[in-house]
Image 1 (cartoon, rainbow, N blue to C red):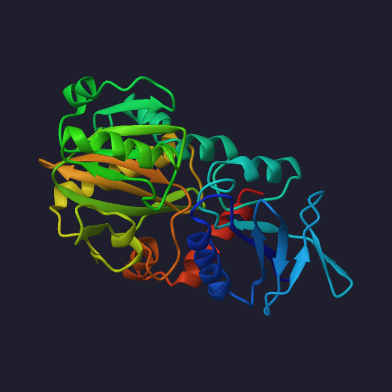
Image 2: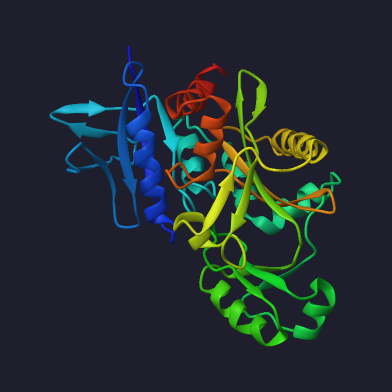
Length: 326
């Protein structure tokens, strides 16, 4: 019997349109011989199921069901494609946990942790994993530019603590450009990071677990036409994404080892992407992305295809992993 799969997309953040793209890719590629997929659009205004013509059917939040042609549709598993809140920060997953509905992401606490860049980096540093030097600010904190520059140097990156898709990120080359960049970052979040600039090769790597085995996909090198790998570079074709990355074998082995360690240490599940900068042959973790993009512009689908995994197989592995724990 086919499993009913709810593909949740949308969300409450500025990443809503990217999430919808990702969700539609998952919907298009799920194996129809094994699964009956339904798209569920989550927004602050409504939770609705969508049919092939985008007709909306209200979702009952008591058991995450909806009625289609007089039949109540219940789900066996939720495929999480929501970037940002409430899918990537754990909020919606806590609800799914309460109603005992399986999902393709890590437990809600791990999702909340990894969505918080500051806390994630603080945790992994305790395991000897290198990260950029950083200053953390909450909205309303006094800002001492000289102290910031003294710690992180110039140029530096200013970014929201809890946001994705490079929204709100700026690279400040001078003291005068730091404050405007802080203002931009605070539009996305009430907490921000100011990080030292790492000069080197930027790479991304996808990780997935299945039946207790953690598999690391081929590493992608990100070469931006812009000053850094920003939103335009990621989604508007302003970059080259080279898979496998043009890095030394020792560097590749180091990234694979670190990624497996982070995945295990943080108790992650599902499909995850980790981003690094390689400076002087050392890998520095930039962030852990527990809901990577699945649109055609996104990195992880490219890595899966390079590894010989079709998107149908990749998404199927993610779902079956939830049932292998029964």
